[in-house]
Image 1 (cartoon, rainbow, N blue to C red):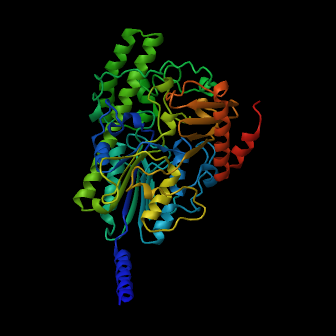
Image 2: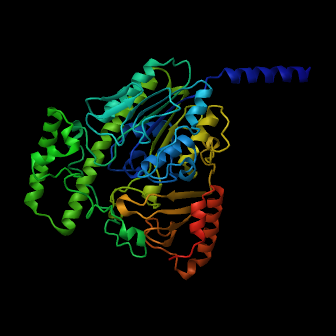
Image 3: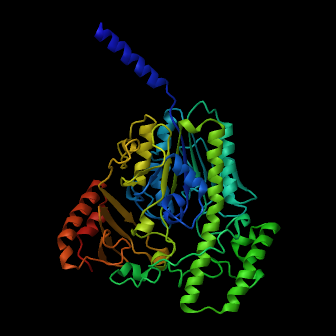
Length: 507
């Protein structure tokens, strides 16, 4: 009788499990949003109440990394769960994304999910794996952007963060919400050239914005850092980036302003022209000019983030109002980190922490404890297999990521001991291609092409990565161990190019 009752109990349990609704999935992916400018990550300057609200109800990942710190390749990895050399999209300049390959959204479609991508994707215009899409063309524009969907191309009047969110919520209203859905919202913000919604002008103008301690980094012992072209002082453009044009006519000749309507143009002229006149009157030079540029960069960047944060709140409100939040996984992340003046830089690309590490926050009531922090090392390739596991779908054999679903309820659990990275692009900003591994307190990087060099850092003693220890006699044992770890990762991810370069002697 006990055996009979046990069999009956298990049959009922399995039947109940089968009747449970698969979780909905909402992924909000921003562009170039740094963890340093998010309240939930400790920022005392940035105001991000809606992202912080998500963190309060879920978990902040303190060690979430990207496999390749640049926008298109990062999104390709999110979709495929594979590193760039396997999914075929290595860089923005030469790669074409193959949508015919397997994507985690295709697996979700097979088990009844509605799927949609709305906003920036930057992987082409002929999507597969999505029942619906309405995406920005290329990088997109902040004002009156062009979208493309299955119905064709259309210019929409308004500010991009509002428009993307409008489209996302409108799509949710069109589907049968009794069936599970996966919605990916791709924001343009906070990508260069940091053009705020006029309603956010002035938010940070009078804030004290301290210059980072590494702003005047001299790059001693780091050859690749020395030759980059992403310096706020030398490479940030007064007109294109900071809106400091010599005349209104010159300003309005710029492509970003040409597409504005009269009210939008007037708001920008009214805000920026007094700033330009003050700048001209001050006749700044040298360090004063560099620090003035830094502050203007920060103000525009932070102002631009305000609209995105506000619109994230709209999504969270929609889920709550429609009684969807209890069964919806929400993930907020950026496509990679970003430099907010550290080392004197803007942009990303390097394997140094500010670029390599991405903000990532995840909420799933009943699974993820509220106000928790997850310190486990995860990489963006791990997101796809994690979502498939949570949806009850088997991971495809070619997917390189590793599910971190087991970490979510047990936030002190470990996931990856080592994190592998490979940046391929050899173009804009003159950042030398490189690959490397982070393991505990140490990081090893191998640069190639533009610069041939090894770099080793002790992150415990040197968290700002200022001192390359590769030639330090006291770290030779560590260097040897880290090279073994790197080679192991290269083989595990089957990166033939990295393996060949690894064995080459420096030129």
